[in-house]
Image (cartoon, rainbow, N blue to C red):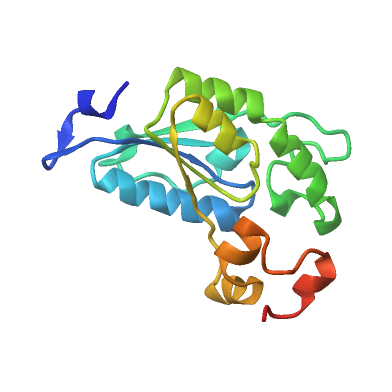
Length: 181
């Protein structure tokens, strides 16, 4: 499934891009909008989310809907989650960690989807810590997309320090309650 085997789009090879947002509409919608933009440029998309969240998405414009494959995943049942809870809007703030536990349970189904229809790239959110190694094992290029406000990045500091190298000296939760040096 090499990129050079795909049809060209305006002289460029058509890409196949996977999208896997966190289960919050503040994340799902930016990923969905990015998916539409990519599709408008002639590329194919594999958008992975739970069945209920996909049903709640806005209708795709007809000219790009053939390019976007909405894959409905089944969120594993976690006893502490309310029935049919599939997004942060469905749970109390104190219970989001149960939603994260269920989200982590999507790993086998996401892996199967990526094996069956391997994209050239997978764009993922902050939550699936396991996805980069799964994608790398399948030969899929990876991109991290974080849909947060600029003030948040300014507050936590440069990614090269704290988030990637852990060399910024901030190691405890309390260290993050003040702006970086």
